[in-house]
Length: 233
Image (cartoon, rainbow, N blue to C red; front, side, top):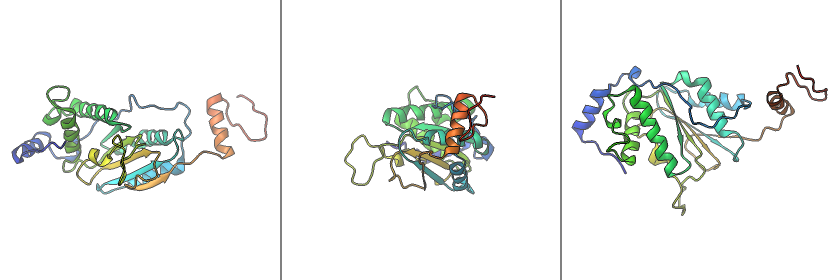
């Protein structure tokens, strides 16, 4: 599936889009990403993610794993919204299945070319370029020298390809990672076997304080306390 660039094409690519860090900025957007209106941020997990992704430019990976519906995606959204300004670009990829992956990469390619029209290998998206070539072109752009401050969020890797796995529909995430060992990556998955970085298990929220915080947000009532009458303010 790889897009092999002859040496002269690779040199032209680097010349056309530049290699300075400020050449790689892409406006942050989470459009089409499912967001829960009354989500209570988990400060402990957010702090651990941020600490794990601190980097001098070399690659850092965090894997959020836990049961379905437990809040992995919402934690990733909250992190991206809170700390997105610290990255040159934040891209969201639905990695649930092959079709979702292809559409996600096409969307990322369009995001890049809207602000970097001189990225010639991406400019053919939706035209003569195949979906496989689009994926490889995006990976190549993310692997350019000095393009190290991006954040990729791979959401819904719930059917990962494991060693000796027999499921033909399982996703091999390595095929969709940039080749250069740089940038920051968050992966959400139900599997505890996606051992690609710092594994953070997302558990159920069971504390009374957290439950009251959720109830307060969803009901519009402030300062609810356990054992006291619920009074709307």
